[in-house]
Length: 145
Ligand SMILES: [Zn+2]
Image 1 (tube, rainbow, N blue to C red):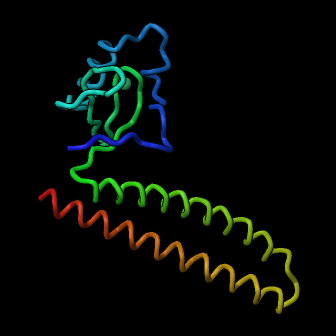
Image 2 (cartoon, helix red, strand yellow):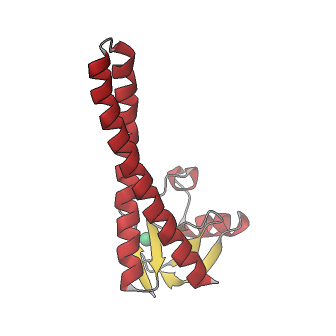
Image 3 (cartoon, rainbow, N blue to C red):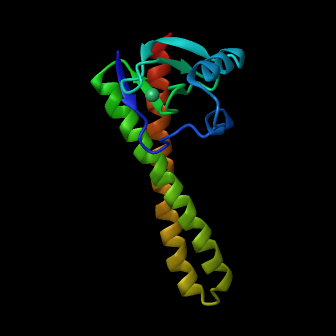
């Protein structure tokens, strides 16, 4: 069993961590009340037990760091790939918004055709990225059951 720091979503931004006089113990109690479960793994930095939220996220009740728990190096690589692909999909989706406004302003059909080619490529990459992530998801689900 390996612990993996979550890279792009660093700190858990919940009011639980924003309140100044909220102590680790108070947060742990609050997490348990909200249906989170205490795990047998500890935060490598704070040495307090990690909690699994109902959403499936694993967090440290002390520093708020999110974690991903993986079974093997292979799974760890998959998690990294998935995070990179999610970021790629986010960036490409933002580009589509930009292209939409270009389409709105384009009058010439030849220009429009060029834009469509770019959109087509972007959509292809997003589709491929999503199918890779879906396959990873399926593989980890079938391993769990
Ligand atoms: Zn911690």
